[in-house]
Length: 162
Image 1: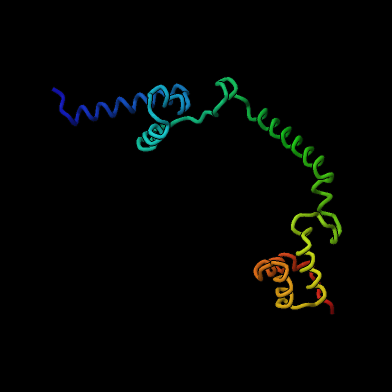
Image 2: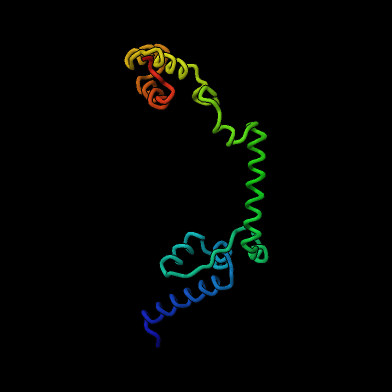
């Protein structure tokens, strides 16, 4: 007669063999969990606890499609990059290269377009000290922290009069 601990070991080995056979048959973990009628979380925990080597298969692709060569994949990625660059050029009207060579007074928008930011930069260029600028901007609803952040962020644009 088989002892309890022997039976437990045999059951554990059978479960391990079953999961390993599913892994070797190129099933995804989701498919294997459905076959075993357990949750994917329980299957993942079992795989981690028992160090089961599970080959990675991309989800949503058939087995024939997953054998795409690296060259074809690289070409597809380059084509995607070209399409994205075209979309960006159409959206912005200019390329990144052109943006790098714009003049210093070029205003690309964003935070610099805010009138409060422009006011802070103007006051700093006129030679106002930080406390005065903070007081003036507090009347417009800007906190001291916000004002000092704008000053530090745009310090290269602020050239004090000699």
